[in-house]
Image (cartoon, rainbow, N blue to C red):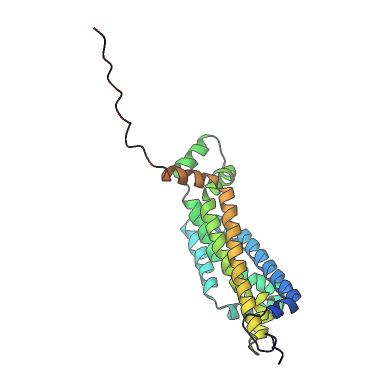
Amino acid sequence: MAEQSCLATNDWICGEYLRSRSQELADATVQHIGITVVSVLIGLAVAFPLALLARRGPRFAAPVLGLTTVLYTVPSLAMFSLLLPLFGLSAALVVTGLVLYSLTILVRNILAGLDAVPQEAKEAARGMGYGPGRLLWEVELPLALPAVMAGLRIATVSTVALTTVGSLVGKGGLGNLIEDALPSFFKAQVLTAAVLCVVLAVVADLLLLGLQRLLTPWTRISGAVEAAPAKTDAGPPAPATVKAG
């Protein structure tokens, strides 16, 4: 009797599924990456001016941080339903929802990074004639990069996961495959799409970590200096010299 294919037996791991649906998997992955990248970039572009506004004082910080926090607590189904009259069943609907969700992470991390810049560094730059704009771009923002990149990594991984919810409107990348497979419990498709989501999140995090290390070389230098063992002994005493009488 001929052995049944893994598609016929509905196995979780099925090489035949990967071969026969490779184009479908590639298309879904490309859509997933595209929506994620666009959402994170727009979120970063929106979060930066909001963080600058929030650092001007409590009068601005309270509404900015409060609004972004409230947006993050809205369930995704409710968020997309509220945006549906504005964008219809389009990718813009999903991107807008993901941008709103990313703001609470990005705004807080940008603000935390800027607030952590040492006051003496800012005073030294002002003493050298730096204006507010030059101070921000050439002193504060570079020193705030570790915190900013940490927030960007969290927001990106979160967006990779939330993009799957876009399957509610047919724009969820790999989430579309998961939703299509659930009614018939197509095991290979569910597992493959889920694993690809995890792989995308891990790869994105590693790429951003590499970018962070590239943009902040001084953090590696300072870490190496701190890890270097301190000398506690000046060495053995020099031998005494004896004068010939």
